[in-house]
Image (spheres, helix red, strand yellow):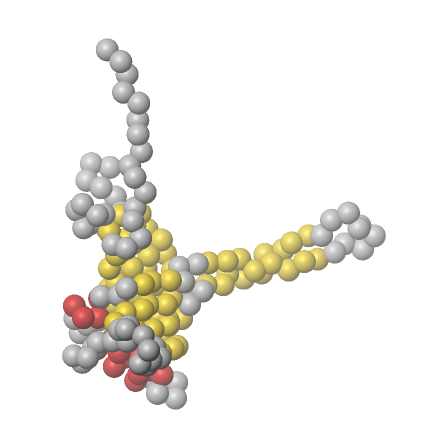
Length: 162
């Protein structure tokens, strides 16, 4: 009997995902987005040269820098709690800013269950933008929400039996 060769599963698709905010007051309209970007982390470094040594430069780690999390979706007209939180935070003059955890799940196409999860800790909105209105284009109005956070954690989702 011939030995079966292991074939890895196909890579996940980038269009099947969900966004959740830690506050239970956010509804289904607040979980639908057309784009998520900014899942990125970088370690800043400082170049240090040693006196008399011209052959190389030391690169010393400094700090961790996270990119802003950016969420885009069609404009919600039916009273979005997420939009209200963003506008209230931006207009608060930095008094009483409410931080929330935001979770982005990449979903399996067949089961709709999370394959990978990113949890953005203590996030707060830093930008609320509405796309341009243009009578020459047939496009929906897009709302862009940008968030800053303290850190994010990437967590693979374990399947049953692992």
